[in-house]
View 1 (tube, rainbow, N blue to C red):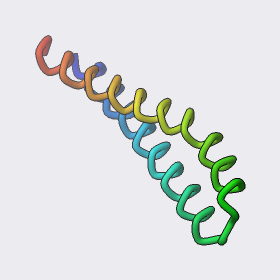
View 2: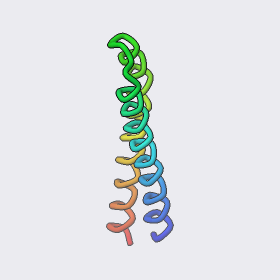
View 3: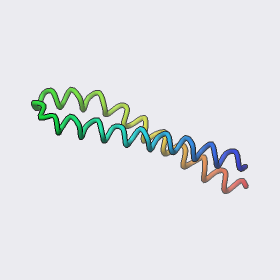
Length: 71
């Protein structure tokens, strides 16, 4: 079950990269001095990507756990 552990780690890492990207995107928008409405528009675009990245990270960690239990 080594392949399940390593593929789960890769999926989890992809989710982590997505979370870091979302943080950087919002941080950059805050530093840009946007108005409240413009910042809300940026946040509306980032929230679904953030949830998707969190989902990927969670699924990857579950794959690692299942691989450990089955291995």
